[in-house]
Length: 154
Image (cartoon, rainbow, N blue to C red; front, side, top):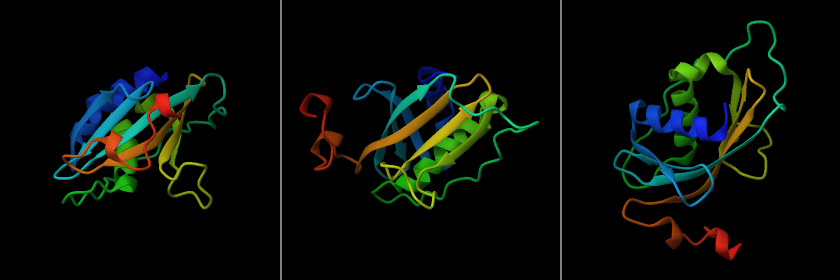
């Protein structure tokens, strides 16, 4: 599964996750994804990946069932819960049989350089990543967020 294929799976399946209002491709980053929680803000993600890097699956190893996120709504999106929604949507898609394993960054004992995101390994050797780029409250634009740096200013 390539980053663009993962983007389409998430756009198609995230709106079926309780608490998610919308998911759409976001042109602010290559394979960008904007996920809006119900009655809350939007979390912006960049999808990347590398081929032939995923460790081989153990016998019959497949993506575990994923819990539903707890998205309370009310203004600001709960980034960690939207992160869980990414895994929930993947596990609910037809591609779940091609997914070997996935993990959230925020639940690691020592998260990588990004606090929120996920890594997923697939049977075709792809390892894909979703990295949180930023958040915006309902009615705000991501560019107004003080921590967000558009590509042209980086």
